[in-house]
Image 1 (tube, rainbow, N blue to C red):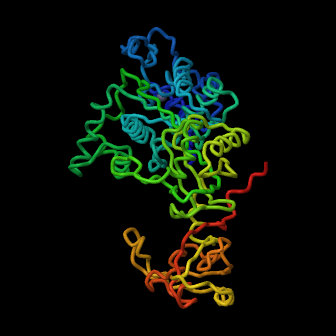
Image 2: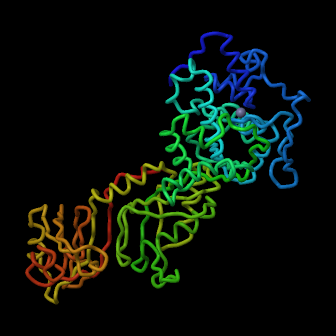
Length: 513
Ligand SMILES: [Zn+2]
């Protein structure tokens, strides 16, 4: 930022008294003097020193004549009857909106929302009148004190923004009122959206709205559109459309609404599935009713997660998926649940362990392990892993009736790996996948006699590259997968049952008991 140069005390005094005459409050006057020290804004004595005794006497009866609406009885914080006018620049944001009663009201609303958090991010949404007023004061200063402001004219009028100053003054107090151990920062987990309203917003914005509509018939009055408009506007044009300096306001900002929402939380783990009649996600009809199966992995997990975190909604994703008739064994498949706007957010590892126990005791069809709270980045890790991870399968295979001999198994076991397959999109998934030929590798292959004594069956262990269709690798899918086990053996082979025994993704980290 360009430094402001005010060469003499006399000149500074002139600027201060000009701003105060415009109805600008002490703190906004400091902003226009370029004061960047947060401590100063919190200290009335320092403010008075800098303003050199010209500071507004807010308890002076001489300036108590401005008529201000009393908001009492509206459910909104009572607008304190200012004995001086609301500031022409901040409309009271740095006056009544930093006072104890206002901050108490905010703190109560935050507590009422009942959302646990250890860090908070206050966000102010302000009326557009403030933007227009800031521009107006800025142009007035450039006009009146060119020796100081002319060289800064391309700087934003809000060089030291009122939002920033509001935070400098208020967050320490809010922290004490809400939770003295909490952290308050721009990337805090609990976002406190405060919407402030100004009674004269519409009339004050009307000239701007007209200007925008002249340029574009469908233009909306937005912060960005206004900023863009001012960017290309010179002082002369500004004067023809807006009052410069801005009029002294009679109404001040009031809190219209406060809304709290917590950043999403992510809980990860690995799941096993022991049933051949459970899908990964629910099969729903158009009305949202489940159409088949014994429920889904997603439901068995999330029905216990939702009440614990008390979240609005959630999103379940896993590192790939198995068909509903395929079991997921071994250490299981990594998954992550994104919890949207959770209200319970602070958990000890023991609490998560208990959640895992609850899920595991509720069903014998699935189980979870390594359940833990993870970072948002984990989701990308999971998705990337989906494209690169290898998987191990065990398949029960059946011949066309002929007996499986030791020689046949030997043929398979002596096949050189990796075997590179050309897989045309399988018929069974053609309705949801595009028709292409994918080269995929079988990295390891081992065949052994079936333990169930059936002479026409054998067991096949394979390790595959991500994205390989294993069922098709066995039967060949009418020649669409080449080569297949049927090709290698020289007779038709079917797949009777399939288990995933390992998903080679080293995430989430194992949790030792
Ligand atoms: Zn102000």
